[in-house]
Amino acid sequence: MMGNIKCVSFAWIKWRLFSGMQRQMGLLVFLLYFIYMADAQIRYSVPEELKKGSVIGNVAQNLGLDVKRLRTGRARIVTGENVHYTELNADKGILLVNERIDREQLCGEVTPCSFSFEMILENPMELHRITVEVLDINDHAPVFPSKDKPIRFEVSELAAIGVQFPLQTAEDLDVGQNALKDYVLSPNDNFIVKQHVNTDGSKNVEMVLQKALDREQRPDLHLKLIAVDGGTPQRSGSVNIDVTVLDANDNIPVFNQSVYKASVVENTLKGTSVITVNATDADSGSNGLISFSLSKTKGSAADIFSIDNSTGIIYVFGEIDFEKQRRYEVRVEAKDQGGLIGTSKVIVDVVDINDNAPVISVMSFSSPIVENAPTGTTVAILNIKDADSDKNGQIKCSVVGKLPFRIESSLTNYYNLILDEDLDRESVPEYNITLTATDFGNPPLSSLTQLRLTVSDVNDNAPLFDKSSYSAYVVENNPIGYSIFSVNARDSDWNQNSRISYILEDTQVGGNPVSVYVSLNAETGVLRAVRSFDYEHIKEFQLVVKAQDGGSPPLSSNVTVKILIQDQNDNPPQVLYPVQ
Image 1 (cartoon, rainbow, N blue to C red):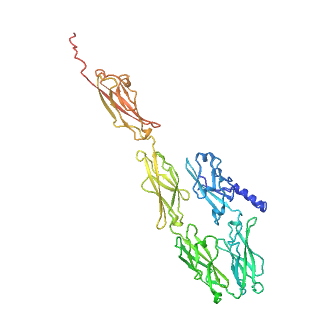
Image 2: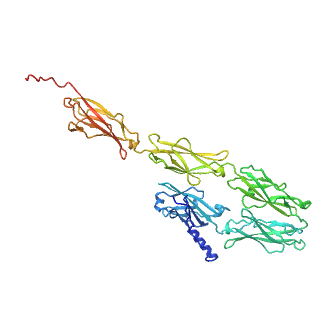
Image 3: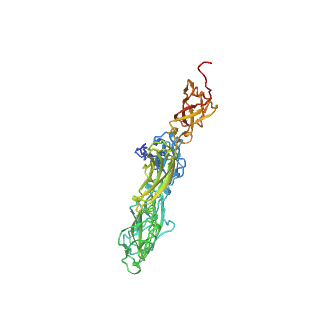
């Protein structure tokens, strides 16, 4: 089997060349390369938004297969949730775009973005994995959650230099170089913008006071925050910021931790408390009263958690599923009555439980199977997946009961059902095979599927007579056509292989062919006299009958039949002496 193959699609090269000419000529150098490993995988890279029919790659060439092999092997694409994006042209051996690929719809923020599927061939059976990496193009501009509604701040004129005001973050569906790159604040004397990069690559943006405010000189400020990406051409989005200057509230709320950490088990009931955050404000009276809130977060965290605005207790608000997301980062704001805001971050790790049983899919099944199939023959290919992780997602597949089959693991999540012993249709013509897949969770979860395998016949049994020889008696002067004896043989094969024909072997009796004396019915095995026997001329003779089946090649066996003539009183006494 060929090794692991990684390919750069010609469609990707064409797109990158075109994009490169828009930027600067000669900046891009492309290299097509192939890397061979042992598990026969191919990897292609293509840009998103390609037209239907665009060539992704030459599968036949990359696997070192003849195009005729794809046609005779009934090459086809199986499995994979996003297999509809591609189409295999078996006549040309190429993989085509079947449907417009939107990288953002397919993978969201996940990068690199790819989807995998398998190509299966038969006679002999082969399985190859194909991975298509979808590359991002700059087709989205940064967007603020409330772009049509200005961000409003009420800021005390006594606010200290360096006070930070968290701003809404823009969302850019693109990734990599095309993703959100920078924030720019419209020119002003009082504020600058600062950015902080989180561990997940997202950015938090804050407006920082660099010059004291004077409400009497300027009670309102109207600014604009602009988010730009790194694509070419560059795209941007903006949101307005309205700042109202207040008097005398000169302390912001401060959290007792800059980062809070907590964990929650998936499937936790709604309303369960996760963690409590705490903040204080040095001001007194209404300026020291704090209310908590969760900032507008990117992704699904805002739909999963809620906070009590007075106590700071964070609760589970939505459904937590480890298989969908394993960690959440939540930005918490503490706002006093004067409009000052302090922020902190809460990191919540999701703990997996074993809540998904393995899913068994039969990708290919060869039934019937000939009884002389060699051991090691692949009977079926199974795809088994478990959405859980670690031990909860590790699977053991086995055959239930003592049957002549075993399970072997091939590619990741693929298992082969292998013939482990010789078959004999005459002993067992059919097998009901139960396969079970069990994970290693506590308690473990399992699934099973059943396969009905029939065994087809080969001509491996010769006809057998019930005796090694026979003796038959016939009284002389018998009528012609008289039924003397009937031979019978049995064949344990099936259908044509068990259909028996009886043949009279060509032997001599007293110098004459045996067919002068008897005839044999080829279908019934009945021996009949061709002539009337005379005991005074012949008292006994032997013949050989062959039973031959209808297999290809045919099998046969012989039996000897001894015919004994019995005397009748059909001759009067004769006087031999004296001569009359």
